[in-house]
Length: 151
Image 1 (tube, rainbow, N blue to C red):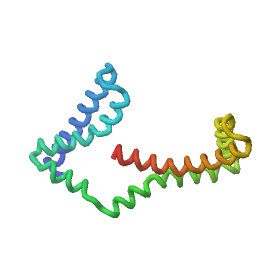
Image 2: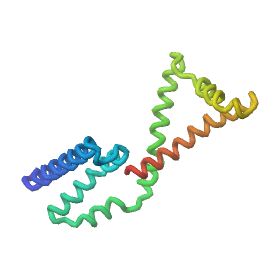
Image 3: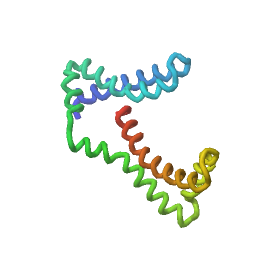
Image 4: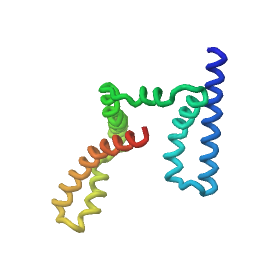
């Protein structure tokens, strides 16, 4: 690795840490609301990259355009990425059921309690089961939305 690359990495690290420190200080003193801090802090690395490209007189727009190009491979990976959580949860469930540490019916019972005041017993139970499974499916959409927002 040449001196030029080491210098670029050093500039990037210094910028990244300074920006992160400034954002943390702003949040600590209440100048930046906590919900906004997480979002801005996450994108601070991108700001560091753009600043580094500008400092080193490279075209930031060309680099950004390269990373923002549409690719079916990336789209497939994007759509599959939330399924990793389901796979992890599935492994947990497979390990937890024999040990008695997972009980889906307990979750359904909590839903029944919440909606039983509005519906009769069997209707509440059926709706609770349906809601439990629908929430699992809707979590995939929420994960996609969060991935889109934060990436």
